[in-house]
Image: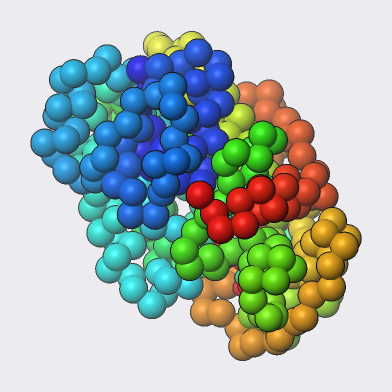
Length: 328
Ligand code: UDP
């Protein structure tokens, strides 16, 4: 049995579906604060609760033979983390420490952690690899880096192995069009552009066009959610197939291509055939100018390879938004 916390969320629901497709037994723990019950695959078990609820965790670990935990439940908005840092330390650090404590108490030593490229801060080179220094510039990045440190420390002391995956910008939707991104409020770039092009609101806002990038807007690396999911499954199999090996790995998961906000708007116009109305706004606090990965390490160690380029990623998101104009 694989426990997926946050399995009702955007990324979690894709990983859960892929795990179920591969025949894994899955238990989802999600408090539904931002997730959707409709997004959870019908083949898996679902428990509504917090990852920081010790009684719920005791019950789960006593009742089910959990082999590994994929921990996705977290708050994950850079801008919000600047405005409300304690929410991020509470949800991402305090609750995760509780989960880790219960895993150790119940002798469960396989952990996959959703970390982030926000751990790097403003990197001193264009393409980010895992050995670069970590200097987060927002509470979200700090909260995730703190857990990486804790994972390193506990793996020294306990039989506890982990793979931390540093996500770049996750986008797109499942090829079936049945699950996709549905946040309220939506803050992410691609769904905001697509919803604007669907006529949901009058303009798309660009947060800052005076960055030191070729067109002045922030550059990000957009990875398809199903490629991200396949990275988790490879990480899980790596842990399960090498039970005697000490594993404390950190891998980037990005598509290795930088796309600026202006370029993204143009690409979304091409995919949808629409024309965007753009408003330039001040910079959003906490945004680094450029975040682009190399994912060479996970390619080499786990044999990961992404299937979606940016155009296919936008097409899959557009398919989802057209099929579900009001979300779930
Ligand atoms: N962004 C924007 N307009 C929007 C949403 C996002 O200009 O409506 C910018 C945001 O400031 C950042 C980039 O697009 O530079 C990606 O933001 P997103 O929130 O999608 O992901 P993040 O990089 O914060 O994880």
